[in-house]
Image 1 (tube, helix red, strand yellow):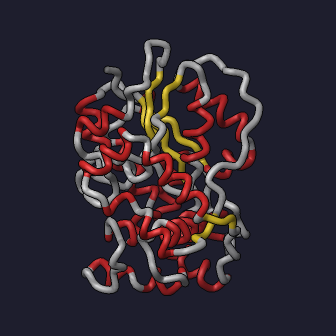
Image 2 (cartoon, one colour; image 1 turned 90 degrees about the vertical axis):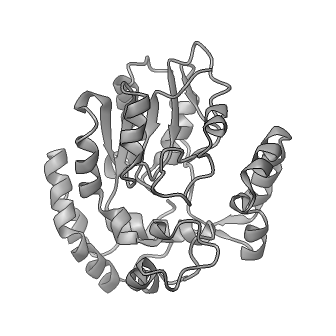
Length: 305
């Protein structure tokens, strides 16, 4: 049985799904078919369905000797205080990729994803932002929310603080950081640098389709019906063994429709950006890169991501 030695640890809505998909096509890379098991997030018990060791390791059952890199992607490992130390305790030589993004864009996109994932039930982002204090106290939480801390949008957007914490545990040579702006500007170049970090030859990939485009639910009722998180672990295992998870995934895919997000109102974007000023400055220092344009820009553009 092969175990993982590579982890894309976040952050959410920063291109991790696309990178996971691109790497999965490399002949020397095995990436789990199911993304975001969040096995090591013991401090975020509602964000993953693979806390049982046997369930987690089963995700790597398809790995073979030729797979020099065996990886998974769980976007809340960076946010979690427990995940990275736990990973290193088991896999001290593991390599990590961190992807970061303007936190205003990140949190706005995350809110939309939470709506489609049934973790959020407040359609207006500004209202959801204002509810963070109440929700931290256990009030105004959606009945279907799997993990209340995932609705703390500002906490999740504090990438500077999260990266500083990660750097206390991860050696520099084991960590590769991608800024989403660079990823958008040149996916081929970003992909090449990741392969260099992983010490892999280039596989000749030259097509990089858009992955995980912005979408909305056709029906929240159907979404609830297909929500696998509501099933006990034993039924999830049985469903995977019988291949029923693929039927569930197909029906879930039908229930999504492409829907680019509208630009966030300028005054809302400004107010939210102001709460991230110090953290963006910290991230700039850690990356030796000026990111001040992130809080200077008035609003996110309409986005398909």
